Amino acid sequence: MQQVKKGDTVKVHYHGKLTDGTTFDSSEGREPLEFEVGSGMVIQGFDNGVLGLTAGEKRTVHIPVDQAYGPKRDDLFMEFPLDRFPADLTPEKGMVLNMSNGEGQQMPVVITDVREDVVVLDANPPLAGQDLVFDIELVEIKGGSPLIIMP
Image (cartoon, rainbow, N blue to C red; front, side):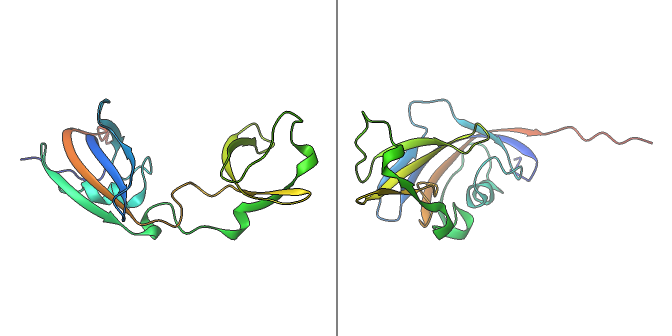
């Protein structure tokens, strides 16, 4: 049977959990996730976790922080002046907002603290600093991109 190798395009069903068992994402009720193995489309630990699987095979993969979203970075915490928030918005700890980075790209941020004149925002990915566990089922191996050899 064909086993997954780097460069293959695969379809998988998955159930993502934190180490305490809390579910953060699942493909249940949706189409399988399709990606090219080794292309950087998914986190490194997930990429590595499908290598060697055959169609229909299931595996549980434990992914450490450094192969997931990395540790929380202090440089991604920022203070934002309270008076720059819209008048109709009352910032609260835990609130998720979308900010623009000045180049038109949107990024989610979480309010971690509301002080007298500033709001502390966390722009780290929501799963940064977490070890992750994925139950993965390989649905299909579609094969890699065709290799073209020129003379």
